[in-house]
Image (tube, rainbow, N blue to C red):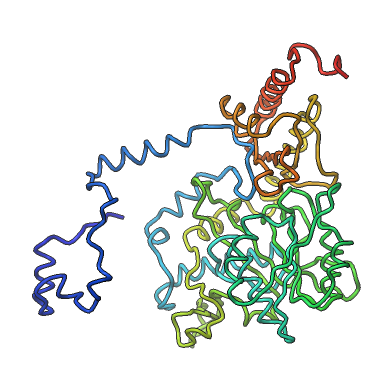
Length: 469
């Protein structure tokens, strides 16, 4: 939408109307020592044409690569219709529906989104979204602590949870006296070590359970959920929503006769129709059991009927910090990521359950094919034994930064260097393949990696690897 700034005449007319002699006089309540002298680091203004050219140049700096980089942000095909619809004015510029009776279209979309997410995760209720997956996890931790009747302020957080999620959660809860206790992973399987959990057993409000985990491995969610409930803890699922098109939904996790599934499920909705966009914005989702609905942050949309029996949509719950509760509010989350949620809702509606399942199956098949190709090379091995979804960890026998730099020079983003977050995995790469990859893409990765390894290890790449075995 176009933005037309006020002219000097407009400003003068408005100031005259309210009886202020200048803008400085209008804001004279602000102490002088809080006023900045100017924005010295801001360059001179540009014309619309110059700004457009600058934006195109900045975008081109990203380059065009064949990406095998996942680690929480995934390249998926998004049907053209999704953002064609999202960019319509009634969606693109809509904001929080303060006046519910005037926002029926927005409210209905959020209601449909909530219904889809509750169905996908197998839980009772969904809010209208959160900022991203990391803050959604932090909010789930706060929610679990609030729901704990004994006042326990300790949560078990496995090391297999995304490192950025763990860092954000720590930043958001540390000043509230909440302790996040790391749980190590088994070095052979790459999943949460149940034996370590037993040693750490004690009072805790919740156990966080990733599925799949940061290494792409599938956790033993049934056993972890039952363990949490057996120790009077809530089970917080951190899930990839696309993976849930194939896997058991968190609401059904557990194997015991008394199991109730995960209590809360959060994650990032980026795989559902949201482009990579150089890192964001994305959106976080949250679903939960009905018993916890009053502890959920954000807002929830419901469907009802008016006095004439006509259906309509309303804000059923909204725990907004700006309202009367102020410091006693459930959360400081004050807005949902409406635009991204709109895209996700349209994306899920277009693909449907079978479409989402097919995307997940294709992503899994491509990752299996990629791993098979890579581990056939001398100097490459698969690190963890657990089943995986669409990411897996490989180990290379030359420095990882050198490998990724050389692949990038050939137009390939080869994966995520795990050493930056897990020093013991400094020689390992997290690789990902989604449904967007072709057989040629996979083979090109294999050939380039073989060339890099052969050159660094002093082998002739034209000689079959079996000749060296």
